[in-house]
Image 1 (cartoon, helix red, strand yellow):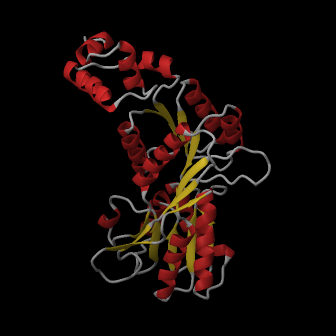
Image 2 (tube, rainbow, N blue to C red; image 1 turned 30 degrees about the vertical axis):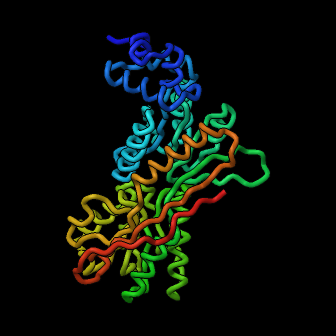
Image 3 (cartoon, rainbow, N blue to C red; image 1 turned 90 degrees about the horizontal axis):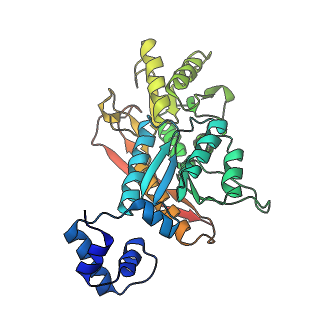
Length: 354
């Protein structure tokens, strides 16, 4: 097996120069750097990751803590994180906090003890312990999908964050259903306390107001971001004295639950109930009818989280940023519109907040 000494001899440089090139610990002239890289390629040299971490105090690893890894939405985010991390020479350690604040704190500590260089975390609805731990240990971290709002001036640490727009796309779904003549539009909302839930409820209310429709408490039920919860919430809405004629579901898992509830009661979409959903997924256009949805930029969210983390590692003291990526409205037929060529348009431009 070739060694660093072999690489140095082949490139005509010192072992120290090879180390600086491979560990990026000191600037090296472009020609010299290329000679080292060519020697590495020719000899098939594989760097010793453990030795490199001792030299650089970096493990070239990222901790990823996201709940419901089995959810297709988070699976696509994971693919974006992994591809971007590998592109930049980082490996991943993955843990599932199960949306439980206590477990979240444990898995984050476990990742920290594995000496990851930084973390990407989808925080729970009660992230206080998480924020305190990351801040106390000065762990470089990016919050993904769900933002954590920290009051100004309280001295609490700020973190980089990346998420999709939530309010405006939900308002668009409500407005679309209202434009089709629906006056009683229900919402199956997500887990209380999550920023995604708050934003989609805000969008729901804005959409109703823009259409001149009143907000009714009884038409909003929480499905806890899970399929079973979405089914229970839909059953509750269908049991109202005057049930809704249209429904917005606030994530893909709850959409599955809603469809299950409608099927079990012999109700058709959109004949008995029009349906629009937040989150598009691979088989959304295979349902009958095909699902009208808001599509989140899942892989882009994962890739952006990695970029933010690498920027933070390169400049630890720079101001924290929140990046919001646009969603796309995918127009199909579950809303009650006739069959047509599938259309998608972006609901808002990307924006970065200080």
